[in-house]
Image 1 (cartoon, rainbow, N blue to C red):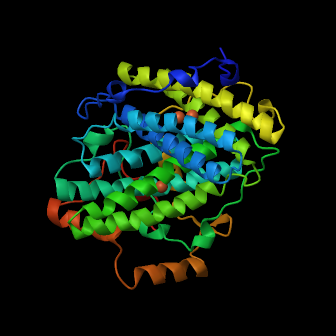
Image 2: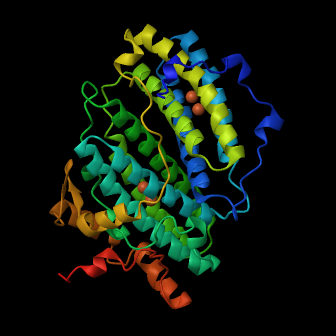
Image 3: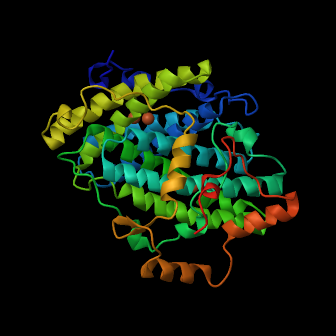
Length: 399
Ligand SMILES: [Fe+2]
Ligand SMILES: [Fe+2]
Ligand SMILES: [Fe+2]
Ligand SMILES: [Fe+2]
């Protein structure tokens, strides 16, 4: 049965505030939880964080006092949702363990979105990005083995493979080449808007996370690796945010944000294996339905259009965390040597790319390469988790 969030009733705003007792949620058990439960938590934290930051930006551009007050009320509740969601993560997990989970989210969420994306140009943008976060996972997994003497396989639980993707050092492009062409808001499928917003939000929180936790390490290689990958996440945010049509009005963007929150909570409610966490997705969905209703009112008032002019008549199939091993292997076999030139993709190291590479490397090996060598020296071999056979690039004839 199709679920249309615009037709459903949610919890009235006055009844959404939670007290300390309700905010104090029990975190998941890192040793026994489904890794994809943790992925859903991380995803929703990114979505709520984007919701809060977007609402702040909108408020800063909004001269209408009443509208601003309503934004503040809803935003406070979004802030409570963010606290509840992110506090489901256990304090016993190390920063590096959470980092590895962040990259697992990037791999399996972006792969899902790429598989479902109807537009070929947008799909290519997700396929391009996924091979990079896939490689980050491998670099961090080696750092993890080296400094914490543990294996990333325990965290990703064999659902996601750990091996080289497009090598991290090749992700450092001239910023100009990170800007993509946007979709056209007049003709795009509603699902494409949701995809772009979801992946942008996920990458943005990864960028924020690395830029803040990176300096908390004492080991020089850890500090350096976080610095390097944090800079790539900056590139990824640029890449994904440029897919969104900048011609959308602020109220249209607000509407899409609330709709997307409904979509994802609904998706995760449908697919969650942990009953306690599922209950939170359900509760938050009921809250979001009311946020959406209020956003739709503002959209009608300030934008003069009807919400169904920009939203789908019903929710698309639920966003699902599931293994994407064959999909990623296929991308490795076919797209690993790509880079960007202008708003498109090429296979050769063009001049602007080479200039950037030279400037940032400064004649030295980057941290992402050194971490592999260092771990080989400490652990006897580099860390990989190849559950489906040898690395696909090894199967190709040497060039
Ligand atoms: Fe929310
Ligand atoms: Fe990444
Ligand atoms: Fe990324
Ligand atoms: Fe919301």
